[in-house]
Image 1 (cartoon, rainbow, N blue to C red):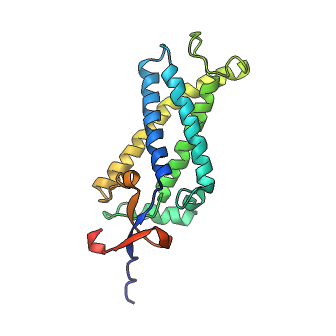
Image 2 (tube, one colour; image 1 turned 30 degrees about the vertical axis):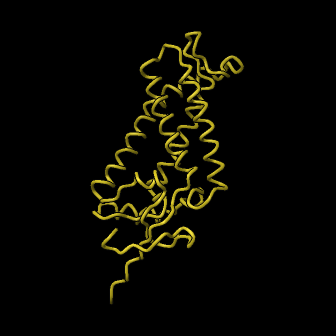
Image 3 (spheres, rainbow, N blue to C red; image 1 turned 180 degrees about the vertical axis):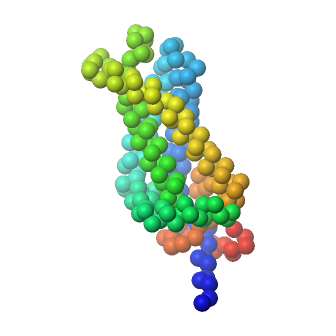
Length: 212
């Protein structure tokens, strides 16, 4: 039996400008908001609040774009079955790029998890009240029954968000060092070398296997 021919590689336009802007804007907001909450926990948190509102807007945009945006921004594009996850995870130790066209299965899980945790964090912040008479969330007075739960969730999720961000950075480093695949540039200029079936209008050029 002969080996199957490798899937062709193509350089494509992968991430649209709005996805890229969302990615970097969310990263900046989350990092600055988290840091500001840590270094100034009892001070005037106006910046923390406004960045939190910005995160809410970004998350709303991402949900809408995940439903009506272009390939591969749509959530349906990175919903995978158990078999796909198993095959991908089994191949992760191999020291070669995956050339996955979009969010790979592990990356997709991290996207869903991070979006869900951030959504819960910003919503809980609307009800949180540290009882310093300064930094209560905008809905704390209107829904006093939610204050205790909102405050507890908001404080509990802060270190979890830090862990998720560090895991995200660790994954980028893993792909760069171990698998020889730099994922950062594609989120800057939008282009990436991928394999497998992709929409024809996204293809820029074919890429030889030894040049990838």
